[in-house]
Length: 397
Ligand code: EPS
Image (cartoon, rainbow, N blue to C red; front, side, top):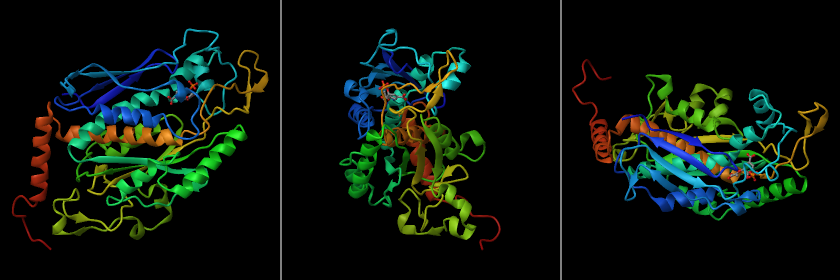
């Protein structure tokens, strides 16, 4: 059984995006409604460009699925591009005035060309449709075990919500998010975020910000400290930094830990036997500064991930650049783009995080089938709740 993994292929203006997932246990029921709802949600939000009016992203299974369930073989899905015009020189002309902040300059030098087109086709955030799809499949697996994810926009420029998301209020926050144009669970902040995006559009500028993902229902012990490549937080950081335009990723208090002593950072441990059946297995914490991960493993508290997205590099007003053919100073080339894509970024990060949680989950529990995974999961929880398994040696202080 291979480790759960995925690969994406496809150009932004090619005919199709193809995604291959390996290592899914057999018998996983795929909720196409959930999957396509998330694909559509990724396309939404105030500040998106004209492309989203053209595309209606939908998942099409090509391999690895029978009667709506996985069969243990590699799963391949397609998302078709309606705006497919890669070979049409008139509609997709060469790009030779690189955009500062985009992959244009580095890519054209790397692939020894003065046309940035081929670099930008793959660097484009169109690829995040694939990653959202893969994550939505991972969410089908996690949901089977009562593990839920929730992602939203925390901040756009200086318009930031201070909402505290917890296990007992996230459904309410989700309802608020789903009525917000910017996917922010705060009506007043949504208005300010809208105004910022509107003004950025008038100014021919762009806006960045922060998005957040919470994962609920995780027991302690997912991920491992035994090897750095299996640490859940390391996997998440790797995956989130791989999202187009992301510049930082934080868990829990994140970079805030630098300014505080240990006594104000580390979450005290208590035990409450009435919570033995909760994901924390009775080990409660009054705070969650760790963001649910200690030693690269879940600790029974919700996982909290924050990602920072830079303002989009394609500005209608252009930025100082050079003509790669003449090396003369020029303005960066404009390509149709978004003014602000924080709404989409929140959806993408939620799904990228879900996939990494599912990867570590499968490392611990999945055999070849969901039946086996479920049996392993139940057996682990039973054993963990029964600790200590043997009378401890020596004295208990
Ligand atoms: C992007 C440029 C735009 C965005 C695109 C990301 O593409 P287009 O030139 O086709 O309008 O719309 O994002 C998507 C297509 C998407 O589905 O999110 C870029 O340069 O990164």
